[in-house]
Image (tube, rainbow, N blue to C red; front, side, top):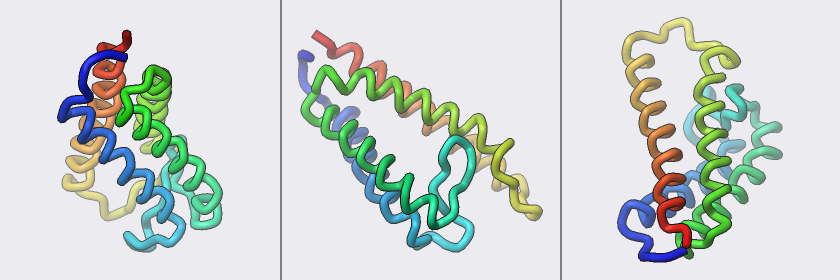
Length: 133
């Protein structure tokens, strides 16, 4: 790959590393009883998160390291992650029951989160692809 990482990819690498730490901690439910790792649209329980969380964390750490070092192998990982994020978000409303008291705020959060997550993951893949040698 050529060129410098730049501020956008630097921020993306740091955010991905933080997400990796957060996913590693999901089984502890530090964010509350109704939280947990979401994998393929389904919120996992603590036991499942204890297995899947470390795997997702390793994937995210490897991806973050690839961005940080501008490695060519990070591009396919970026596209794989973009597909995973998009699939996860599209499946979530169908595979995870929404709380009965979910109001407009829940919907607004979901839309904003979806735009940022999909935009960030696809944007990261595009930016990395542009730096390919």
